[in-house]
Length: 409
Image 1: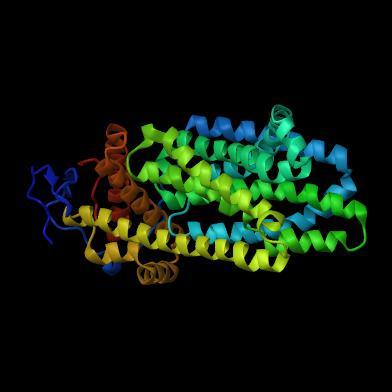
Image 2 (image 1 turned 135 degrees about the vertical axis):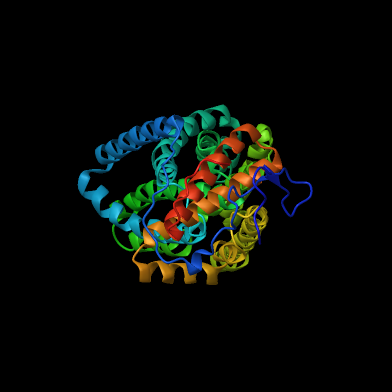
């Protein structure tokens, strides 16, 4: 399509209710990148908030403290052995989260914070506040039995709260990267994976001390049968906060936080208390409760990813109408086939990094456009949009070989 005439500052997107989209600032239309002659490496500037760096340092220090404590309590030999065993379920969880996150990868710094918070701060908080929680409800614990109370009441409430606080911190300090439910599931899952890693070390160490078949049984139950348990619980909290971000309701985060925390606690309760309280046989419990819950979680994630791709197409369509992208480029960003074609093209040209950077910039632009449409912190979103559009111009200059300069937005 042709671009706007010079001097025309705005263009309506395909959604009549959406705010106006900046027009393509050139007389000629944007060149189709699939027919461009060359690719060159361009790395988008990394923007990490000071708050994210601070909480990462804090959570890392707590993780180191938990590691030292484990070494003193368990001994270095036991910690080394059970730590290696705990790496297996951790690897399974990280691989699954990477698959969920591959469409629009989250920044590594935020993911590192999430893991460190889960493996360190969440564990430390659960131990400290769990003891206080048990004392506060000592009468209930005595009536139900301390083991049952700890499994079906204390653990769901205290552990999910501590993990949920980590998701909330990411939501507050890395808001430009927390765009929707899929992002929330990734951050919640990463925190939960870190928590499960340290918790597995504790469980495996108890079984390791008993020798015999106890170690095998605990590893099979926790490492093979239910590696995703904590991930599924805390994903609810991330999902709810992601809805708040997507709907432009960030100021209502306390409401959405509670809306996510409650099902996380209920899921944790069902998982811990289903055997004994609901089912008497393990295999019946596993096949009728745990497996269906896991299957539902997988279906939800697949549907959310499909919805995310549709949203990306719709928001980038606003910019395509304004001349920033061609229809082929929107397909490239929003479809699997388009991504594969772009990756193949970049591989032939020897510029995989450039294509990844360009794609990630477009993903951030689509998320920013959605923030503008939803009215979420619109002034900041408009500033981010201007920065990202300038970067798009830089990419296009190199991709097409035209001596254009960014900044006319």
